Image 1 (cartoon, helix red, strand yellow):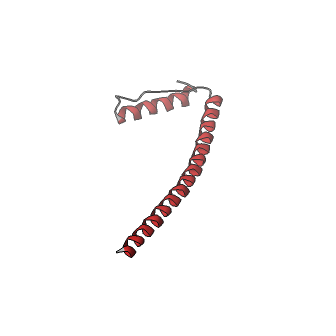
Image 2 (image 1 turned 180 degrees about the vertical axis):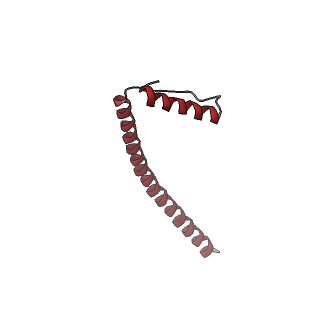
Image 3 (image 1 turned 90 degrees about the vertical axis):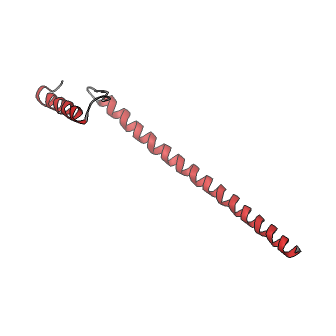
Length: 88
């Protein structure tokens, strides 16, 4: 009976030691991954800011309540207006 109890304690110790080691390693990997993602997002934001700064005009629209056909027609009219007039 004593040897069974001892092996259970040994198994428990090794299990939790492995769990804690793996969790700590995973946490470090997640932290490095988060830093990489944040750096990529910062690069994307910089690109978008540059495009906004270099734009002659910016159009912001709210498509809520329009059907797909209506949005398609609106985009078609906007493209055509820019082609013929250079503006809308």
